[in-house]
Amino acid sequence: MKKKGHHCIVPSLTPNNGTASLTELARQLQHVIETHLEDDEKFHLVGFSMGGLIARSYLLDLAGYSRVSSFFSISSPHNGTYSAYLLAHQGVKDMRPGSAFIKSLNQQEELLSNIPCYSYWTPFDLMILPASSSIWRPAQNKMVSAFCHPAMVEQPTIIKDILYKANLAD
Image (cartoon, rainbow, N blue to C red; front, top):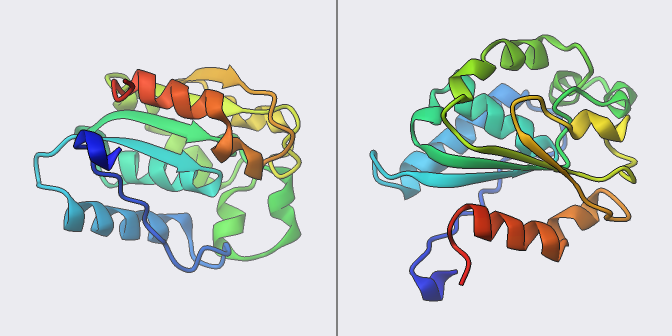
């Protein structure tokens, strides 16, 4: 990507173990974006798993929608995941079905009406329960036959699709 003049930022938000609220992590994401990009610079946003919900919080709660050209979500629990009942950390609680966090995001979805949104999901996801929770109403949803949750970020079909839809492909 760099060879073609594209700049890719991969933030490390901490803690990434679910102890911090997703709202707190969205503020960290906002800081990273403000540090690395010009104020009026548009960009494409990609979020994997919990990162998809963090990205939605950035877009909606922190008005990031005004800067983003398109949003790509990969195996994100847009409708919550029952696996989030295994721990009582705030960030994990935010990912529970029907959580106040998810309800708040859902109530603001109309703000994304001018942004192309895409959600990639696999029916074999054992982290997002049910796997169909990655299907997100305002997005163009694409089912991918990846064998597990972590394999989604390495799926060539997803990478090619994102590059094509973001107009970054050869």
